[in-house]
Image (cartoon, rainbow, N blue to C red; front, side, top):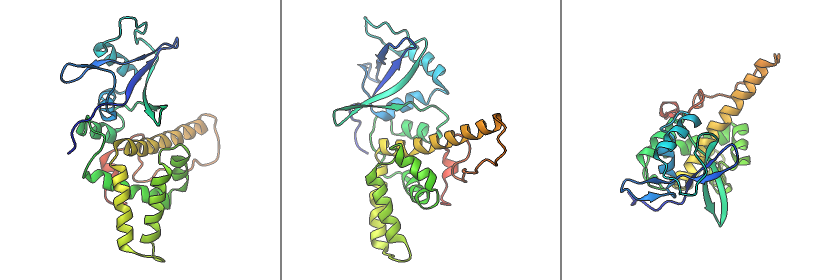
Length: 240
């Protein structure tokens, strides 16, 4: 397993009056830090059930700068990082995402998840979604939860694993590349969170139809592997 690396992500807070501040906490060695690996931030936020719980937790452990005007009594948190000199953001994840909660704690401080059975399972999940759930797959691509390279790899695997151009050697090679790509915690997290958010959007649409009394039958988009509002290890399984 690779050694723990320096952090490049920060946990930000934005109050209702627009004040933005960076969370500063002490690491295991007692050193005050404001940049962390993504796994470390997820391991922290998934200790909480919601934003209110996270506000309470951070108020206890945060070591704000002397000139900070943010008491973190309201507002919300988000994650900030830089990619190719561009500032980007991610939503925080809470305890209801069981997969991210467990993996972030297992690989706390790391950026990759080497030789992880779960990653292999989710690699085949990606293939299944591309082949059988076009609406979900389009959502993941349109919202950048999977990038063009990962999508390309999935396409090549399907091509060589198909009956018309079956080539087990090439199919296996591309599957290994997909797994290697998903071993990046950030890539895996994006894929997982994308499925989670898609499921939530569908639930909200269904609820809206019920509230306004819409007559048409609600489209059944849930599959055996996407039950409820959270993703669990038991939902993944090998039956893909």
